[in-house]
Image (cartoon, helix red, strand yellow):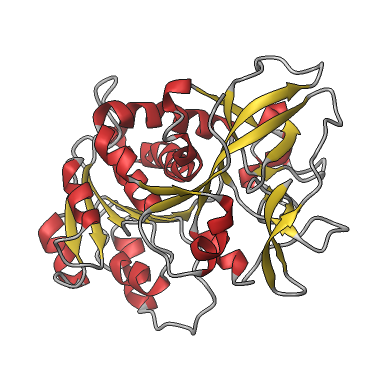
Length: 373
């Protein structure tokens, strides 16, 4: 079968003939892959910044943002049927009995670091025609979301961030006494750094959770991303027009920064203007660049005197995937044109080199393997 793979030892990215997988366990599910998103992680793996093949293999099939259709079920599978659409999870647990995270089904918090990740670390990914995996890693998607379901995996980043935020901000007594059912962001301002897929999906998630939401990105208006941001009810601020020092003047007290740009220089600059009782969430993983200068005294002073919190969030667990599927459905109802506009185009697998090695264009490019039956 066709698959896009990297060979780190040979520094090759190629469309290869990969062995088609078969069911090996009673709980296995075989999927025909429909859509696989191309993201910055895939491009970095194809630049050989990281990416580890499975043991005994010289190559790694990439791809972790996906939508597949069930075409075969093991006898022990329950809750799925032939023809179902699913989004598989990415991370697989380590095998250490003393890792409380993995033994609890939350391998996204793995203590040992010996987890595997499909398409990234020691496990083949989804940029191929067929995939076999355990049913416990499958997340059922309503058929009416098929057009945009490939966005579920990148949305899980924001969903996990908000899950943790709800717990973190219970430290504030007045938050605990909010009216029942009030959204977590009610009366608060959030700034999203970056207008890529993770940032734009994060902005949508913040909006539906009640935040007054701003997206801080580089390019001046007019541009398509600014138009999309404004269309969903957020506000777009261009860093080329408004320097970091002016950001807080436009926004007011910044209660939350959701970093989705993967650039440490701008992230730490914006951290300087994080508001009182504010939370800064890192989601990006910077590439290997030269060191930057950071005013550590100012950042430490603000963290202490303004009761600030900084945390990072990576990958996602089962509940987070289910939340993302729910919210993609909500986005389609609330921002139908904007959600569809996130997907720049669908391309055949033969176009992989331009998408992975060429200049990054658009918002979310997708490799399309097949239509749902």
